[in-house]
Image (cartoon, rainbow, N blue to C red; front, side):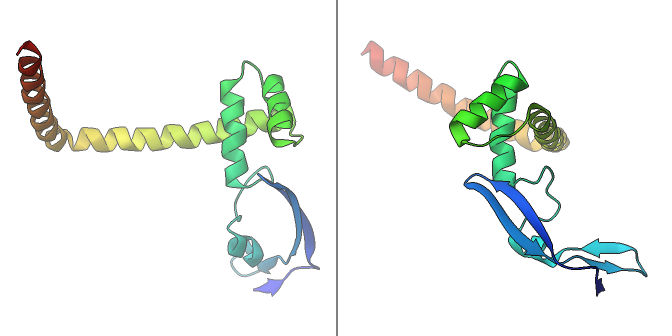
Length: 142
């Protein structure tokens, strides 16, 4: 790995505002892979839209809960005191939505694969609930 060029100044938006830092970029000619150790150290490597994951979650919340991305932009400005344009809000909302959808599908697939275990457990829980409900109803009658 060899450092490629001079350190670059990066700006990234966080829930607490925008921060600026300098980072080096390293590139390996042999494997044609680049890396930014500072980003990895800060836990922000691979993030998109130049914002932290926490801010992306917040932006996605407003993006999906408002009737338009313009309305979400105005709410973000009011709530977070931060200007994020409509297109970025749309992209972030869709990106987070895709991630949530994939995780939900994985959980659903896992539940289906283990339905026999869940069925046994659910039957036990339902039986306990029915017993408790009957005891409660009996107590109310008395």
